[in-house]
Image (cartoon, rainbow, N blue to C red; front, top):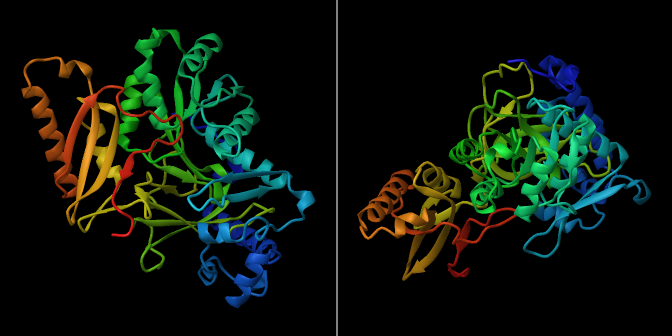
Length: 438
């Protein structure tokens, strides 16, 4: 395999040199953070009066964690480290409280973010000969413009198609010879399921690769998309608090996502004890920005559960790789005292070939107990057979496999293909109908 590097000096830098670079960048980041209203108070309370207080990377543990609630409490300008006139752009994500988490960028921030996304895309084997169709939401969401700028930096022919309107997406693929797309995995599955309905033959499109992100998904989902669309699917990871896309990305080896450590200082902690975990152990990912000037964020608790790989990648990059996001510490379902991640259920459903591309997890109260129901689509043809035995056998197979995986005995409902709601953005896989006060 011929590997290609967008920034070879940084991607293949000796780890000792990389850590020295991180320490210098961390001190610059601290200097900026101390200028903000929020961190000025927070760091003073922690006894950190200046960047010189940090002598080594291990001193990061002296800095308090930052949470999404902190970002909301500092809204709108409590974490801004530059003058309002130096701000070039903002991105934001809404929340249940109605107060958005807003991230600000100056000109240097946009340039460094663009470089990280370009590096990510280039590492998968893309180049200026590719036609890139960005089938993701534009606007305040970071995924649209983030990938757009990165692809243009490489010189790719970019089609800003946005999300939705599947028929138009097909037409643009055919008209312009799209070779690469960016979309949520749920939308990629939806696209495949609509091909025959729209009369689109696989040979009529030139698609080779897809970048999937914005929502957790399983390895079985990735394999299903690859097999159905006959493409390579690359995992990506990002979050708006850390710019958006371009935090971590798979290279051509597709064995974990390289987290760009020149831009982010990463830790894995136990979400309960908050203690740092050694490489290889699964826990919550904590990130600190190292390059962003307008709005530095220190030790941000992402709530995403992952682990570092301990062995080096064959591609030669020194940046450590993180495993597929298992789920979120705050998305975990507690069913009658048992911890269940939605990703565990997806692993099972997508691993059964007779199951469809769409499913829904429903949690309700049945008296004092929790009741878990998994609704999954299957081929419409299975309902037309007068013999109910295949349907019952499939339902029992899914139920038994789920119980073995999550130790909870679920109800399984089989529904016809395309009967469950389809989301063109992040898929809504869980419907928790339990009373909030119980």
